Length: 177
Image: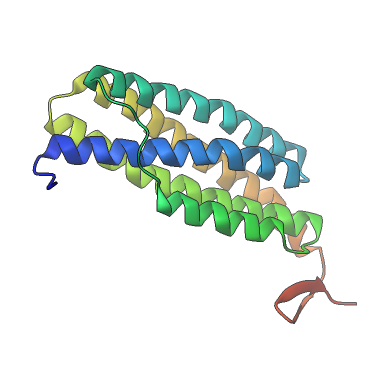
């Protein structure tokens, strides 16, 4: 069936974000567990709670349409989560692992910022001002999380430079002896 209206595209994009947020609720606890910096771990835990709020806002929008957010899998987030899992499987020194986790988390934030920016524009075009307000709240929280990660990285990146030289051996990164 051809989707021939902006409203259908809007709902489809909302479903994509819903799937992305649901996937993130499973990934964030793993990222928190892998983090060695207490501040980074706490940031992941806080973002998990915030993500649950993002899901609730999306569900509120779906309810207004009499629709469910289910039925679509966000393959973009699936790929980002997979990359993050691969990072956690690496044998990085603690501070270097934290740097890698921040990079993975910022990729996720940038993806979400793009998605929420798009649906905000659609909500405006469709005259859905209440939806737009909810979506802008989420967009602002995603931007704030990205900034917090940037701020954390300034300290953690410096610590990671003290980890020592790294050699590449059969695809695994190891500290040089």
